[in-house]
Image: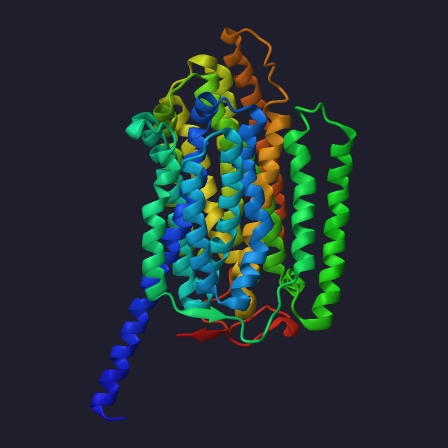
Length: 507
């Protein structure tokens, strides 16, 4: 090769390298938009309840409806990316999410807002699985630790900016729109992601023809609805028998899903849920941890917001500022854990995170009991920092642990399944708020005594959260002691039947 050819090859490599880092920035921005949307809504929930006259059930559905639609569509969204191209499905998801955000922002009543949030969750289910799948298909194994570390930092940044941005937008009441700008802010971000994504993201898909498993889609959606709907509406209907029948029946639906997917995999190799992934120990154990962790987050964040704004009577801005120490701690710990701690200490880092987060919850429980209704924001800072450090030690390494040994062909399906169980856990947690929080509150008391009722509900919910974190600590013993060694052969640790060739990259 002569010098001019060498120079041309180097320049092409530099352009390709620039393109993939631009692509990373674009998909991370979309992930950030989704993360902010979840946290920004939590802080605005009391304002929505007050301004729209929403019931407790509608308030739960503003958050749980999004999580449920998100969970129900994530596996399908991941598989659609494998079949039709991750870039194409990502851009469709971004466009739909942007339109749904506009509908949320202009919702005329609580019913329209709930419906728009369900649509928003469904379109996010097309967008989000492609983020990690594009990363998995674009970056080699030895660079993914760094990229997942960045992803963890983005998670933390979303946690930082979401509540504070939601509080500011709600307090400012821009153009008299009250809480609506928390959704409308997605519009310019979505448009920019569409324009830049169409230019810089390279297409990738599974190397062999796959078909969408519609029976699997129906079974996944039905099972989730049968589980979460009764949890959310059971309390207001005095826990009818049909609710317990529905929840028990969901287990049968999930069992039928597993049996059907096993047969379909043997018949044509195009199942919705790639069951061979569960032969990878790190994936199976990580999925279990991710599910329970989703329940923890679903319970805590909604209850925490209601406790501060309705129970203690704080403004949205004060509540948002109170959460900043937690969010900063998550961001810092998430950024450090993957790069510095996990390569040296392995699984112990995640277990230390579970113990640390549980310790922060118990400290919060003690402080809320000691100071009661007179608790100050600065007094909450210490338990929130401890909780944030614990969460940061879990969230970024767990992503790496779940996906590190997954074959690239199934990157979209694995990413979709990982996000699905998180959101499924989140939806279950939001449904459990009816039991662990509202189930403790007596809404018939005099207005002056309502704060004490919310305090009791908050403390009860914290007890449940601490117990779930102990369960997470125990399940983590099933995770591999160390992460895969950088540079190890692709598919190391994956059963022979599960190893596939590299995905097709389409320029």
